[in-house]
Amino acid sequence: MLNFQKMMKQAQDMQFKLQEMQEKLKDIEVEGQSGGGLVNITMTCAGKIRSLSIDPSLLSAEEKETTEDLIIAAINNALEAKEARVESETKSMMEAVGLPEDAKLPF
Image 1 (cartoon, rainbow, N blue to C red):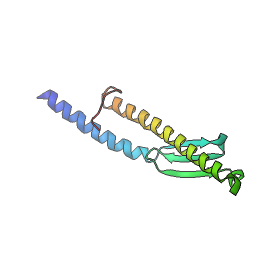
Image 2 (image 1 turned 90 degrees about the horizontal axis):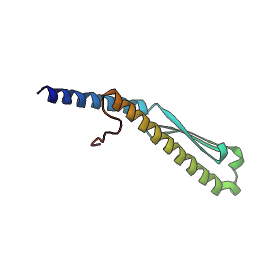
Image 3 (image 1 turned 45 degrees about the vertical axis):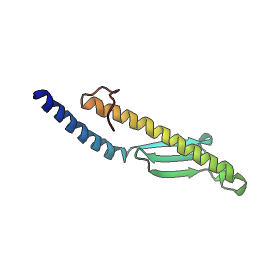
Image 4 (image 1 turned 180 degrees about the vertical axis):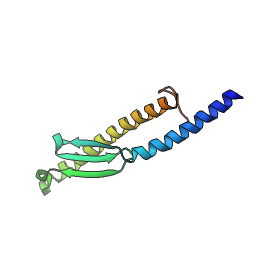
């Protein structure tokens, strides 16, 4: 019976830590860029874009397609950074509740 109680306590701890981590991710920002810094994106680890910076040299009709491509590349770069940070935060949370970092969770 003690093992079941311990397991339930671990599950509750993990649920609390997951909720805590989701709140924390709303405030953690990552950056993505493209074109050697011509386009910069700041995004939270919850997926909200906080800022977009475009070099003025790209703001002409002739550069429209290039600018669009660079914006997409910067967003994708920020998404990759976000995923890496979420993975890192998840591993830390799992270690805090005593689970191996490679444990497969049902969610």
